[in-house]
Length: 455
Image (cartoon, rainbow, N blue to C red):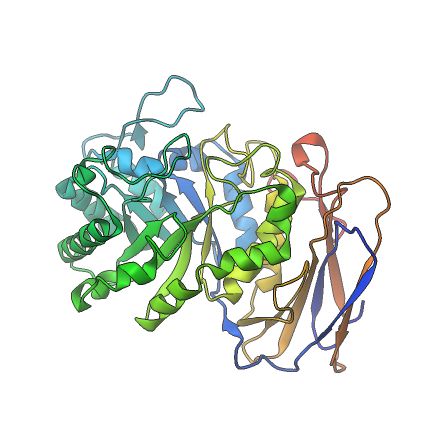
């Protein structure tokens, strides 16, 4: 493959099932509809109670994050939050990061406290941090105390979340709201009552901190428009909006591995946020996915650790960036019971390869456009530099291949290229099949190289 006007071509053609040719025309400059890229669009979310352990007990964490920083020059953005943020009470007198009791190491605590050192640890991170705090307990005095400590301790504090997924999903994955679960929802709890609560807390916390644009608002998981940003924004007056930094939503598409990694499925899934993105942009705010991953509840054993989930990660990040979702935070939950986590104590999982490929493809880019319309299994993205000139192309074939039988090549033809000085480099992300797992010996390769022990 030769792409003379682009410095690098990323070929993601690892799961081939049939012979065909797809043809795309590459523009010589970013079209007017190209989307501006965030300098670090790929972020990570850490479950609130587990955050200290990821940074103190899992040695791969720092190196895996550093790998992204090496590619982009910027540490990936981080969000700390999740279900346990609404079980956490701030204790200014404890010296511990977190205090809780569980029956088994893989249990999430039903209640916990955290101290000033929690924020001090977060401050040591080289990138920006969104900190999730408790709204569910309806103790705004305690939450403001924690927010003040965060503001005074964390020079990297980007925003504060007030409550996680207020519509609530219980352990049986039966959708329900906070009613009867959280004290703040002791009465009727609807999107309207939640919005009124959010608006009030945004103002009170923002005023207590004497800081504007400090709140990451929204943070629901149900598919829009209900519980979505457009619905929330419609309830906000100018004062509330002045304290909002950005709007966030959560997303776990789920499904089988075949459907998860399908490019057309990914495009449809990202498309459900179109109206909310427009609403956020309409009031001058960014829109992000504040918590996301392949399957909710820590992932699915037969889906989330597989190479196909790594391909989903890669294509999903590119598609969300194309949709003007500025940052996408991939959630990492309970250590030892986290099928979708990108790394564990000893090695990197297949999803990390997909994330790494996406970060490398967009590194240093200023704009992104797609040459496909999202309706087939094949994708072609162009990343442009600040001068709007093509910098890299990423090609993706999402036809499913199980790892046995004939593997037929897929041809991509790129038209409209012009000669440019310098050599052309191509890298190919590949594995034995979509179901390959690192922990079962099925290591992917990127440019014929494997990532091991965080490097």
